[in-house]
Length: 219
Image (tube, rainbow, N blue to C red):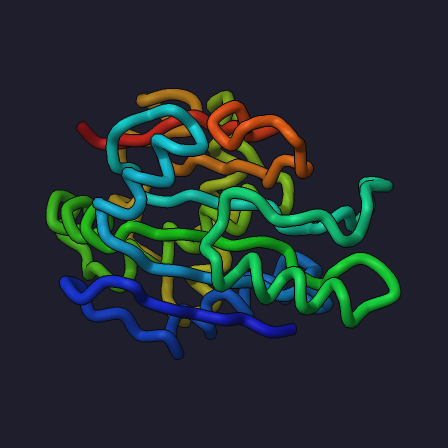
């Protein structure tokens, strides 16, 4: 299991060791000890650009999750060109896939907006670091198949987030972290976008295969 954490913004202090520990604990809890993950923390400007480019929404969101399974379990080629991720993650994914005889170990990349996380943390009265931890878990859960398209699915997803956070923090997380998410409907936190298979079509025509809709969960 390998977790790579990088911050590409300077406004919010981010602990790479903390995020790495959260990600590793989550991967273990989810039975994905054999998979790797990239975590990138950016600002609103960068996540807005990605949100518009891959989902057509010209506004910031809190977290994006890109599936980089590279064909694992899908019958697809184990060496497609990753689309919709940072250049660094794409390069690492290609390098790793070339070194393996089978599918890549790389599960995906979770991209978090520190600016949006800071605003949401201030509204809820929680630490920014805790909100970022939760956004990381939410994106990761989308990558392994969890969804929040209806209240029942959302409750299951939120309960799993609580369990993992409690294990990492060694105490229950504050319930207000999930305030209003069920009431706001489908995808009220993350946008999860598996990377499309490579095409010859112009880049502007590429679209994610699956989307957990939303952006601004707390207007």
